[in-house]
Amino acid sequence: MNSVRKSILIVEDEWKIARFLQLELEHEGYSISIEANGRAALGRIIQEHYDLVLLDLMLPGLDGLEICQRVREVSQVPIIMLTARDSTDDKVQGLDIGADDYLTKPFAVDELLARIRLAFRKHSLTNQPVANLELRVKNLVLNPESFEVKVDGQLVELTKREYDLLEYMVLNKAIVLRREQILEKVWGYSYFGDTKVVDVYIRHLRSKLDECFGQQFIHTIRGVGYVVKD
Image (cartoon, rainbow, N blue to C red; front, side):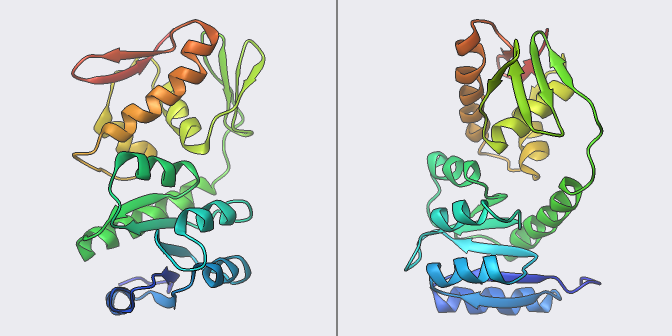
C-alpha cells in the first residue's frame, strides 16, 4: 500500500478493462481517474495534475502515440503505454516519442504494478540535479546538463532514448554490457525475451555516430552485448 496517494489517469476506451484497472489500482492506494476519448484525455493531462498516465494506443479522437507526443512538448509526467500491438517497431516508436514504458496486453496485474513503481522511481531520479561534468569517448562529448552530444564540436541530434542509451554506455566505457543490463538501466526494468529493442537503438546510434563520422564508437561483442571504448 502506498503511503502517499498518487494520482493515475487511465486512458482506455474499453470500459471493462478500464474498470478492472481502476479497482486493482485503487486497492493499491492510488487515486484513479478514467478517460475514454483521446482528445479529451490530452486536455486533461495538460490541464490537470497526474502523477502517471496509463495510455492505450488505439483510442477515438486521438491515438496514444499522438497524445504522448503532444504531452511531451509540455510535460514529463510518466507515461506507460498499454496496447495489444507488440511488434518491436511499435515499441520503439512509442518509446522514441517519450513513453517511459510499454506493456503488451494481456498482462499480469503484478507486472503492471511493478512497472508503475519503477516509473515513479525513475521519474524521481530524473528530477534530481545532475553533476556538472562532461563525458568523453575519443572526440565524442556528452553534456548531461544540456543533453547535447557533439563530435569534433559538431552537434548530433539524438532522441531522448538514444541519448540515455549512449550516456549509459559512455559512463561504463570499456565495460561490455549485456542487452539485459541495458534494458534494465536505460528502460528502467528487466524485460527478458525482447532484447531486439536494444539492437534497434544501437543501429540508430551507429547511423548517427559511427557511419556519419567514419569511426567506430560502439563495438559488438558477439554473443554478449555492446561496449563503447576509445
